[in-house]
Amino acid sequence: PPTQEEVPILHELCSHKLDKKRLGAHQTWMGDTSISSSQLMQMEYRNIHGKMFGGYLMRKAFELAFLCAARFNGEALPEFIGFDDVFFLKPVSVGDFWTYTARVIFAAHDSIRVHVQACVEDVVAGAAEPTNEFYFVFRPTPLSESRAIVPETYEEAMLWLEGRRRWLSGGAE
Image (cartoon, rainbow, N blue to C red):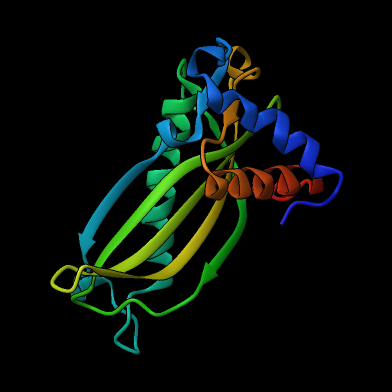
């Protein structure tokens, strides 16, 4: 949850959602940066335990995060700075239907923070279980340094806050 110091910041940020026309020229809705991909996990990328190799999952998440950051950056490809954090919540098995979604959660003059959330889907039951979370940091190009992300929902506001906290702590830089 937000701290007392963060509540006024979130209030100001979220007041934009009342009227989409109030977004500035350099502001983007967080939801508009979201992109997803899905894959059926294949045997060729399994580890010695019969689960998907973590490095493979990280590579796929990075590729989607890079595309997400590049679309947000707009003018040119951003520079990859590093991983801020990686969470392996549950193993991914061969044959699983793995879906992952990337979105820019925070942008500042010196960084673009991208969060990738992954889950295993049971397409028959219509259920999904989280498996991984990844936080990537990219450096924007000069003309994109003033871009800002605006959350529309409570969930997005909490992600924005997480991205801001990571930016303030200087993670991955």
